[in-house]
Amino acid sequence: MGSPFKWGGKSPEEGFDCWGLVVEIYKRLGVDIEATLKYQGPESAPREVPEGVERAWEPVRGALEVWDVITFAPLREGDPPHVGVYVGNLRVVEATPQFGVVARRIGRRKILGVYRWRG
Image 1 (tube, one colour):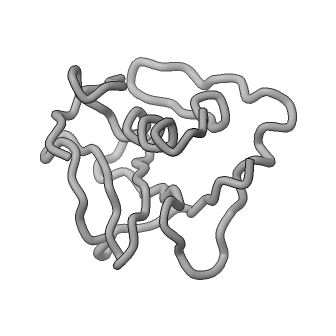
Image 2: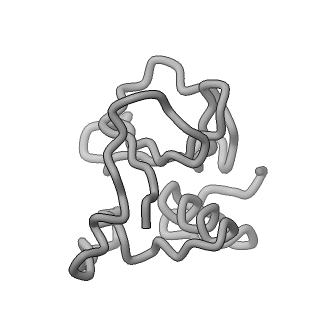
């Protein structure tokens, strides 16, 4: 918490973008997810997903569980989708340009999908 936002950022020292924060959280849980999801940021191209890896993420159709990854609709047209990690009590940890790394309520934001690690 409290790290600044930085496009393409992947560390507490330099800051995080939303995907970099998700990668860091899962790294601290002992899971290397960097190559498991396709991500398009403003300066990055889609990454190839190794064969079979996509099965490590399961779409969630029921209740949220702690550590689920939530994808949100972009706030502004032309922005990439936003991601955060569910931490319980209808709260998500996320990195945003406005607030840096924060935990806040999901609220009324449009959820595009929820994914659970099954790797």
